[in-house]
Image (tube, rainbow over all chains, first blue to last red; front, side, top):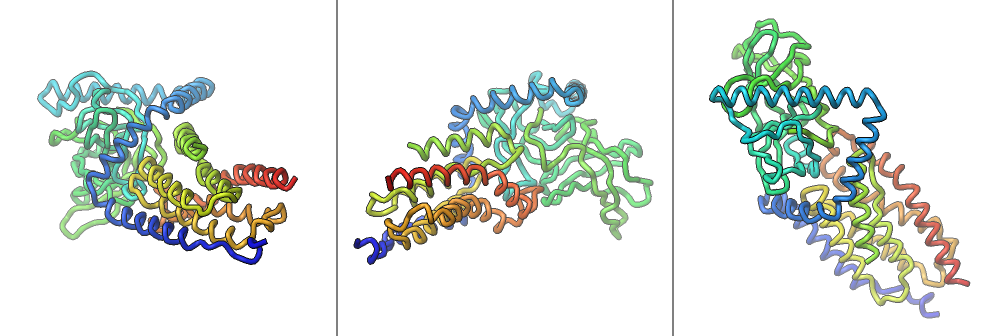
Length: 258
Length: 158
């Protein structure tokens, strides 16, 4: 009967609850700037990869079954494989010519699953489930359906982080294939991909293809990035910036190849 | 043990779906359900710290920064404790179904809402779109959980 007349005292719960909330806020506040958090995330991801393995296998089986039953998907995969192979040959060509030399052995066309894409760095980086054990090397290009989406920025034994072309800090020398104008591809950090430093009045039009240029040693030349979508700004310094429509769907890929 | 299994199942389903759809928050459904049927414990501290641990581990796995789901999970548990504590045990009969539904729904609504409120959007998905999809996928799980709860209440009364 007491239960009817005496409301339950929840003071202890509130003290513990508020402590937990403050602790959560503290973690949220300080951890985004801590480099060690990335290591903790990686370790936890590696530990979970063991119980998650059956789910990964089942997903692979499902995707395999689906692509077999849908002819167009199969053709698209074949196209992506051929594009990867083409990119791999270009890289090998560049390596033999004293170029980038990004790969130490044949790893082209292998698929990796995106295991983390943090909301706060959504347009900057992704984590994939392949690492040193799978011959992933820092600097390697990462593709989605044969289109360049980023570059491997750090490698752990079982996972790697790749910086995306939408990141403001990844700058890639690029060429407009139709005009051979050189520029720099960089993201703005909010989803847009821009081609900068193109001299004004060079007849650049929407639809022209953009790929990596044979400048610098970051990436081999000829890796497809996307196409010109339109002029973004035309600076008073004589250079224009163009908006690029990436070939890959930058907000909706769950697997990549390298 | 049940909560650990639910957390893992939620994680495995998320891996299996691979971002194709939103997975219901099974861990929080289980936690709220346990809170609702728990009448023997003196307090519910276990629920607060279970929510805290589950939230941190989920953040570390799927968000990359601990705090977002941690706050949401603990917030839900505090609200459930407060609201449910207002009803005397004798009054917790099948007539409270609507309230149970509201509390279970809250467990699915609040945690994913916090990252959207703080960040504005999740990648290419707008906040509102994400929320609607999440809630639509959660509804069957909420209804099943509610059914299990009502059955439990009926059995206890009998």
